[in-house]
Length: 186
Ligand code: PAN
Ligand code: ZN
Figure 1 (cartoon, rainbow, N blue to C red):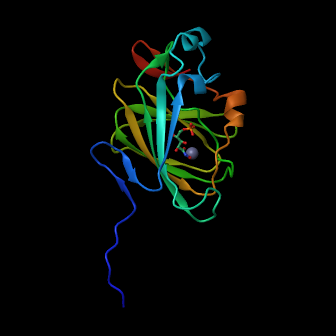
Figure 2 (tube, rainbow, N blue to C red; figure 1 turned 135 degrees about the vertical axis):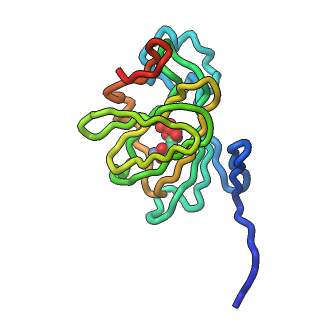
Figure 3 (cartoon, helix red, strand yellow; figure 1 turned 90 degrees about the vertical axis):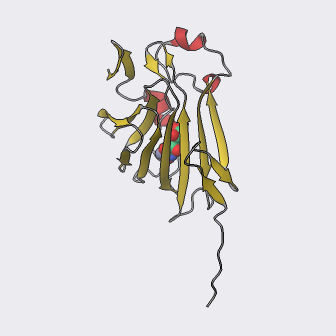
């Protein structure tokens, strides 16, 4: 029998919500990377192209596409709006569209916007401790409706992949905008 203590190669900080270790990938999405995502083109163009809108860290312990594995991610969406539309992620279906995902709120306030294949769109409130099951064939996107960073954990299958094309072409059927100081899907 072998009794040995090993340390996991990746750590997740419960104080600053940072993934530390190897291998961890760091991805940033700035204004210039989000062309066509927001409705108000004039407001979009008035933003600084290098402004960070969101970042994603992920631990991918197996190569992308491996059946049976899992990935762990942390998304951080900055507070802000483009016109009256909240800063949000691009949003996607999974390439293997039947692959599900868990999200959970860690910090800040926001909405998880969901859309099925019939283009029905709805949203769930995200806050620290909220848990979200994103079922098969459901497009998903996060929006920050608060005035601090929105931090959300995620776990998804390593063979899910990301299909951005459908959302880039047709968007979601509703947008999350601020009306009278409150978020509303319109
Ligand atoms: C998340 C998302 C992350 C960024 O890790 O990838 O929130 O959103 P976009 O990928 O839409 O830019 C996830 O859902 N992974 O499957
Ligand atoms: Zn996903």
